[in-house]
Length: 164
Image (cartoon, rainbow, N blue to C red; front, side, top):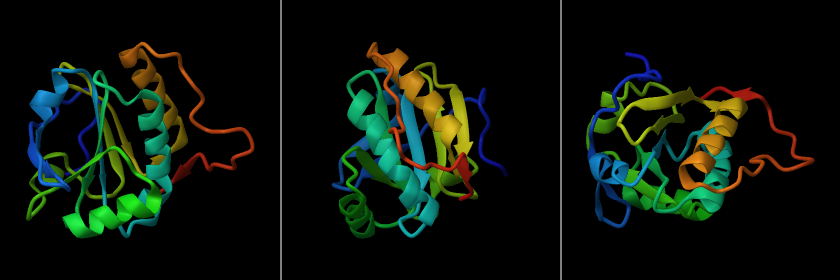
């Protein structure tokens, strides 16, 4: 099964954060869109992508826009990843046998879903895709009412894409 496409209904899930706090997609969607980024700590493309997701969080993360990393590793490894790559947004741990990952059809990481407040997937992105991250940042700006800011900085050499 391939990753769920844009337009599909996002499967509901409840997972625990790395600090053990319960979370649920249904609760988060009550506040606005949710960006769910599935990853593995040893994935080079995830390591490349997550600092850009952190930028989106720093600019737009608030009560109207939720950003979650969903780790396919244990809490200890995920905490180390967060520390190494400067990740401040909430990271969840997919449970044994990866129920959330399986529901979303994850076969490659990172796979990122922008889920609208209505529960429909607005964008589905596999690997690092620069244009997709720019669209996600624009959606985050709309959701939060903040002015759009460039995600990529002048002088940064960023590839258009990088497979997962």
